[in-house]
Length: 69
Image (cartoon, rainbow, N blue to C red; front, side):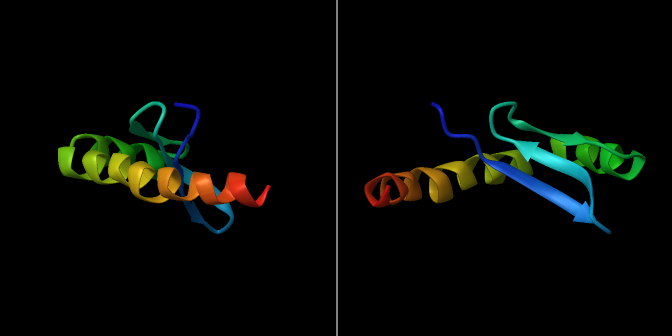
């Protein structure tokens, strides 16, 4: 519940779009990013794929990180 998966897109050191697992959708920060976020949010397979990344990447590694700490 407390784990958040964030996948950001950058171009020239500027973040233009981001997927946030807490929101379950993409957010655009520039004109280009807003257009892409709208397109990605309309694609259910893209949203499902990003949500699955939280399960695959974050939840499998959180136990390892806590054991080391």
